[in-house]
Length: 135
Image 1 (cartoon, one colour):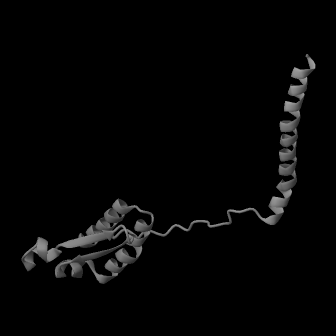
Image 2 (cartoon, one colour; image 1 turned 135 degrees about the horizontal axis):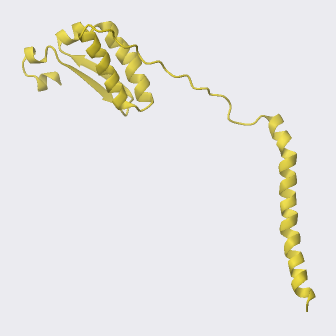
Image 3 (cartoon, rainbow, N blue to C red; image 1 turned 90 degrees about the vertical axis):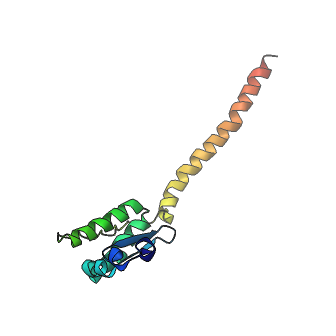
């Protein structure tokens, strides 16, 4: 890609490309030799292992690119490099009721359903009786 954009080695030597693949939720960083040496293997590893997977899993692609560019810019400008994002741990507790919880609410639910069925049968009978009793 760099060779197509920058035909001479001098033009592409200090350039880099961040590639984010949204379908696969992964990415890569590449560049000219000078760019890659100045960024360093440790930061490149952190970017491809921490930044890109965390933000792409959450489908925050713009934030992913911004974070990567900010960290690379800080490294190239000899500023403190921002820390990598941390993966949020979601509480994955159960979403179903236990047998004891179901048994507790079963009697109340049964009572309500039976009462509604009785009302649904008795009220129309009483209405019918009321209409026919006048005759």
